[in-house]
Length: 97
View 1 (cartoon, rainbow, N blue to C red):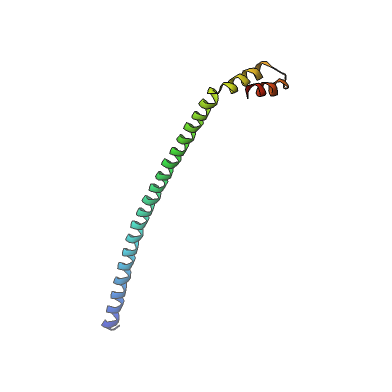
View 2 (cartoon, rainbow, N blue to C red; view 1 turned 135 degrees about the horizontal axis):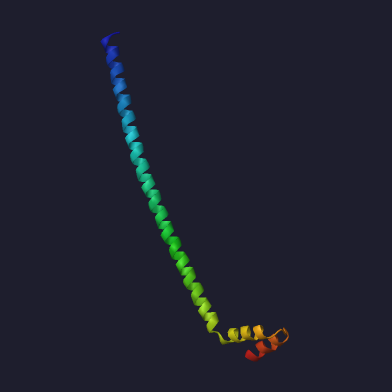
């Protein structure tokens, strides 16, 4: 085999090995950065969902207090608990309004 052919094979082999090493290092760095980005996005999504749940519960708490403070609703619930007659409810509503 001539020396020129041996040098071509050697240089091609060196180029392929270095390309493979650079590719593997690039892939490893990309995978690490991508995983970090995905984890950060998931953490942000988790915080957003936590805030949404807290806001929903606060809204529900406010609405519950608002309904509980309404005299008509309290009286109606007390009346419903003590009466079995459904016909008197309309008269009670008319009297309230």
